[in-house]
Length: 260
Image (cartoon, rainbow, N blue to C red):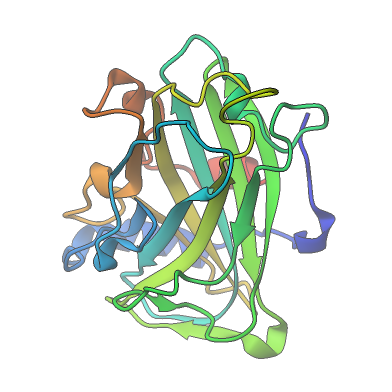
């Protein structure tokens, strides 16, 4: 059921250095403002992106934009790729048709795409690569009856490797959900169903793979779970948000398994 893109397939090797970074994180000061990983509608966290989004489901034109950003607690040299995981928990017994993307024959197969460039309004968050960047959806899979997991990647050529400095909010990715088939003949049911959408993690891959860094909400003191989470068609945080949470520490084996 997985829709994989081999264009971005890179080997993922366990690193003792990465484990040391995770252990060290608890002794460092909290990031200023935004959390380690952040998710907002339309803009980056630092540029005032919205935490809640409501849509009347009355048009098939236009789109909804999810913007992911991060603040690394460490300097990370030579970053060439981001791997990201986003989970969508639906306030329903199962995934409605409107949220079915990517897989052949689904109601809105082509309505989810990834953008590797920041919003034109970005000021506080800067493009991590500062050069031409490619993006792709890697997998789209239902992991529970009402939870979707989306993995995506943004990458640059090896000669475009970028150095990440600590404390700066960086743009990572945009997920664009278009409004096709929201109303009228052929509309897909479920546009009005509430959802809790969580950025689980951002994995920074480096040119030498020695300095790879795993970023997740809860990895630094002061991280707020709400910074990595947005709501859709909801006015209050529902219990479904607890079904998809990035705050639990993970072993290196669990991290690798999420990208297989």
